Image (cartoon, rainbow, N blue to C red; front, side, top):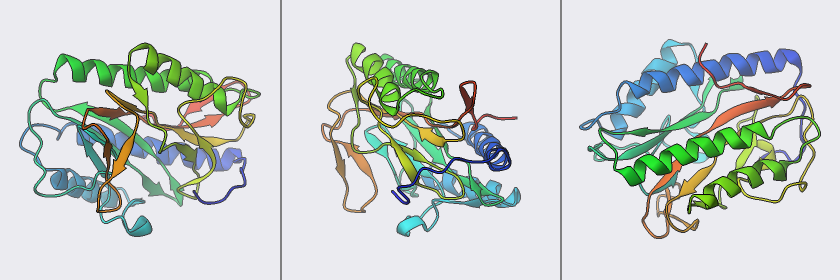
Length: 254
């Protein structure tokens, strides 16, 4: 996961994170216009890479520990880290999480959303809506003096109240000029437990919520994580900063 030391970012650094985050949000806005039946995940990847280069930024996932593409595209039962490819063509009723991390001026903007391809089933629609709400509830817990466990507890409570499960194998993380660093942010947990939040901490909250079991299986490519039971998974992610008054979402469009 990188450095174990939690670094508090300066106002100048958070401003850079805000600009990188806005760029990431704009990239997702752009890719959203392309998500439709008949497009391949490789098409989405190539469009993202071209857009990112045009903004004088670069794609953090590309080459990261050997990851071969510029974005992650996780379709249906894929929890995270799906690798874009030409043979994977989106069809009506699919759901797809697109995870992007452009680097701008040395800082990472890390965000993801799950999109509907065409018309979703009622089951897929509910899962995606609950997952988005899980993210909002996790963010709402963030303020100086709160605990990391408060974030996970809020997410877990809402997911399980809707008869869904929370992935344990993948968590949020600190992010700055380093892609993945301390602290780790589980999306399940106990209120009042874990490290205390302080102003200047910057990290992602990115709950992965499953229709069935929380258990994951990683495919032979070493990256793609799927649900063990083959049921749907959805995810949303923001990068946030702990402020003296509460929380700021850094991955919002300008």
